[in-house]
Length: 140
Length: 140
View (cartoon, chains in turn blue, brown):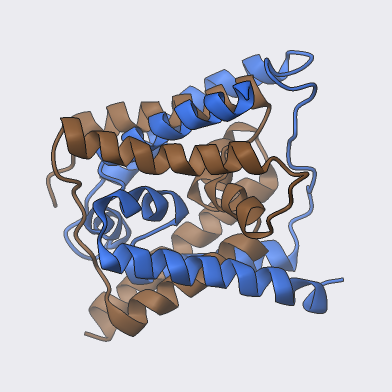
């Protein structure tokens, strides 16, 4: 129960952050990615300030024996730079460049009740579903 | 150059960083939104379904709170129709194959000094910049 409430509050903070920083706005994201157009550096400020907080905060936390509400840390274990990582990053980059939406802003954007955002999220969920099904057939 | 949202970017970005730090401190988890979503799509009851759903719900709720107390959500779509669906599919497939998106690899992975995440972030950012250049300058 406590973990659920903590995750809810963190989600709210994250969603507010995406809204206040305007990263929820595809125009801001495309503005950053469009280096040959009228460049918008807002995304750089967002990523930079988020990274300052995590780069300082993360090492202080992982020094602990365990997190506050769980018995152990659950951190990614993969270390190899392999073809799924690279091909996935390439496909994600193309999709991100098409619409200016990545998973966080798309999900938070559902609050706008915009049918376009719902369509994007449905396609994104379908994409993950397809990948989950197809993945084991390609990489064993 | 487009006028950047400096105050919003710095405040919102810090909130995104803080939310990620709190998730690690409380739950011992990486705030990777595509990965949190994957855990809901696979519907694995042994893999933290409640906190995942609570976080995604909070993400939407954060944007709802912004609508209620700050103003309309700034969302200007940059793609419609088949292009938007293709974008969603690519983001879904890519984030699953590449084990992460802007939050998990970009904000959290780099703070963990993960070479995998740094590689993924540079890759999807570069590919997104090229995609925007091709779709908005070469093809239009």
